[in-house]
Length: 448
Image (cartoon, rainbow, N blue to C red; front, side, top):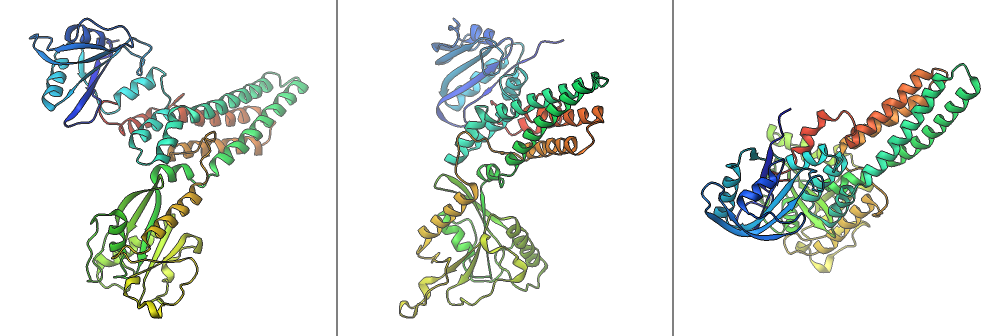
């Protein structure tokens, strides 16, 4: 088998910076240091060196070098880092110099993480957590991703899989000793007890109201209302920049515009939508159809009304449960303070133009998000990916089949347990995951 190539890439951000980090992983990583930044430093110690072109001997820069010998490295291979000045010319010259060394090539997106997986340094749930940690925009996302990177899901699913393997072994024993009734009966009883307890745990794990996905993807808020009630103005006010066109012309907003906010450490995704009315144009009708569809899947719908028309009814086609809707009265600045009437309970008065009431509105949005997500429990792992939920659903179905079918069919019941264990194995990457590897690692940038 041909020796695996040594990969290298800029691991820090692109563009001008004070420091740039170039990572090298593979069998000739040490040789790169020997040729470009000799002498090679002791493993895991930083050394200040001249970085030279290996062919011309020209000094490219002065920087720090680090050496990690296999298997004690992030990828499990020999690995080196060059920490150099972050100017574009310095970075480009260093990358070109490494590329001149035989056996080296530029890394593909996610290739460092993939090699870490292949060498047993990370499982798939940890890698997905690492991708989420890189993408984290809020403190809640960061904490959740960090726990997953540290292996909370790997530990949980690995323990469940071991229990399933043990239960499968008991069923295999029942098959082997089927002529000894007492032995077979005892093995089946133990396997059934293990499966019952495990199924209960998996059901509780799945019944989490998608809180992990909400933390990861954001609490989704949809702005709805009749045309010209100020939805786009409110979106701009919340974003503190002009992201949506504001016009007195009805039907200006045709497509959905999204803004991501960080409210009290939680990701809130606010969507501006087309005003709901009896539209004649096909484009506006399509916009309204999308509005209704987005509202049905939202975590919270803000129904906005004009302060001068408080009696505007909620259209029946919106079809949103009361607990998922908050009424927002906009343009409160247009009302005469002498004739103001008390607003209905659970209604918030604002002025997107002057900023009146926006602090109270953002506090309510944050409280809705906290109630939806629930309290953060450090020890309680949560589902964060649709892929996880899919495999756990398969595991649950297999366990349900095992417990609901005749136990005398030892071979079939053992197969139920094997299918359940395989589903958990696919979660962590222990078995049969080639079909998902490309999708997972493609999320990473080059150099990670």
